Length: 67
Image 1 (tube, one colour):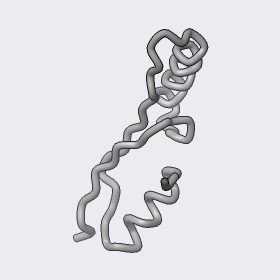
Image 2 (image 1 turned 90 degrees about the horizontal axis):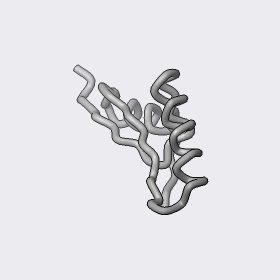
Image 3 (image 1 turned 120 degrees about the horizontal axis):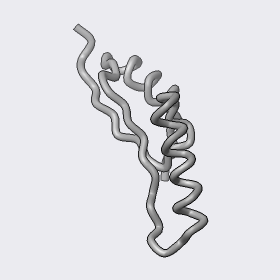
Image 4 (image 1 turned 180 degrees about the vertical axis):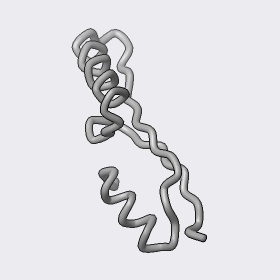
């Protein structure tokens, strides 16, 4: 299993000749677990406001070759 931060992803993309055109983070939703739901709501709001995905459970990244 591997874990990446937004900075790690940016560095790896750059190293191999790509740049990140879009990044989004999302939270794992454990249905039936109220603490998880409340925590995810707060973390999700923070990520959407600050565009800082350090709290994300998962990342989705779009890469493009550096022209």
